[in-house]
Image (cartoon, rainbow, N blue to C red; front, side, top):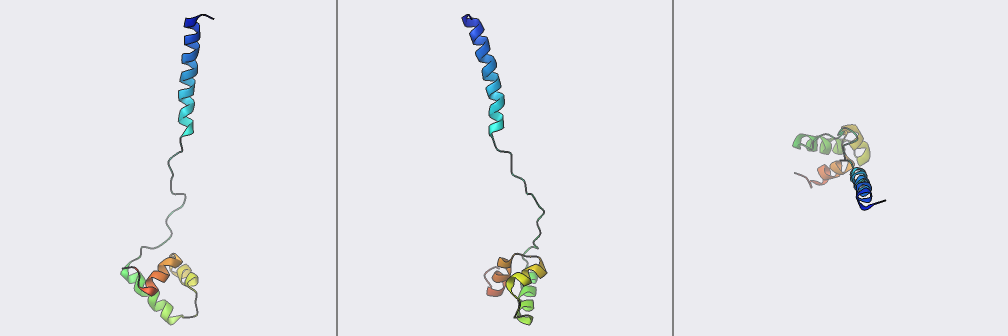
Length: 83
C-alpha cells in the first residue's frame, strides 16, 4: 500500500470509531414507573396523625399502605418534622 491508500483506510477506520464512540454514552434515565405517593400536604399530615392516634397498634408501614405514602412520611407527620 502506498501512503494515500493508508491515509484513506485510516480515515475510514476513524469514521467508524466516531460512530462507535456514540454507543459508549449512557442513555438518559427515565422514570420507570408513575409516582405512587400522594403529595405531603397539611391536610394529609393531619389525617395521618389522626389515623395513628385512633389506631395505635398499627405499624407505620400499615398506615403508609392505607394512605399510599412512604412510611417515612408517616414518621414525619407523627413526629412533626415536616411542615
